[in-house]
Amino acid sequence: MKTTGAYICGLNSTASQNVLNIHCDGISTRNGEINGFLYFFLNRHDPELQPQISDATEDAERSLRYFKQDGLVLRYRMYCGITSCWLYSGGLQSLFHNQSIPRANKKRKKAESAAALKLHELLPEFCGPPSSHKSMSTLRVNFLISRGAVLCSSTDEDLRRHNELERYYKSDYFSRIFASMTAIPHVRKQCLTASIVTSKPCQPRKETGERRRWKFLQPPKRRWKFLQPPEKKRNTESEALHDA
Image (tube, rainbow, N blue to C red):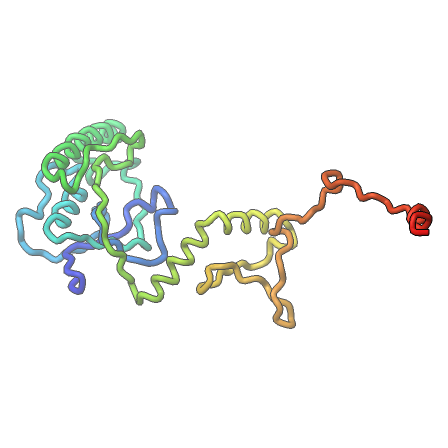
């Protein structure tokens, strides 16, 4: 935080809904929510950084205020928290209804929608109009995504290598390989790794060290004879008489 000039950091807030949003490396600096279940900040005793609109969106409002003042917030993309606050009472839910969870969820969602509209009016350059999602657990606050660098957690070289691996494992090519491996019994036990340099699968090797070719992954090369014109048979006797 001292190196980048940021004053707040947290975890990835969307990975619990979709695991494809989580990454194996990288720290995001874009505009986005730093969830209230776990965050760290350097206190500056500034009233402008305190949430003032609603308890239903206090973490989103805090993130917007810090991003407005500092120009970045840090989110560790490789970590997330698994929560189920919409299924249980207590905590923030108790502020809306102590006994009935469905009533508390309904009142909290209504307060969240009203607060999202106020945040849009207060910070239109960082927060858009409230989003209309059907899911109860989806946040209505619409963060306007801005460009921001992805910082490395260790070294720049490790971040580059990890990004290459992510692109490979999320590609259609890897999906076809994985589907082929699960479909063939004798290949199911093979261990598939990836080449960090070329982002291609490392083939299993023989004892001599030569790489095997995965023939079942290659399309069969067939020659359809019925599509080719028939070859004319040469009449050797007629040709001999003609030469004579």
